[in-house]
Image (tube, rainbow, N blue to C red):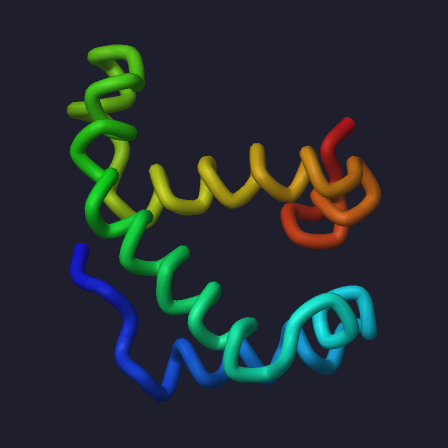
Length: 92
């Protein structure tokens, strides 16, 4: 998977600014945008490593989109279980 187009990175940056001052206060808008870009670059650069860390069945059986959604679900749960549930739907 390639890095996101600039328009998508801008959407993420705007969304982070919208969801709360917790992102806008500690750093300025340009620094937040640079962090979004760096995050996307890191994900792109480490995709092969992430795939290699998965069990063989997941490596060969899941699509790239499914692997990304799984990664997002785990990361969302680290934010909070309630956030993950909003993202993924019912988890019980």
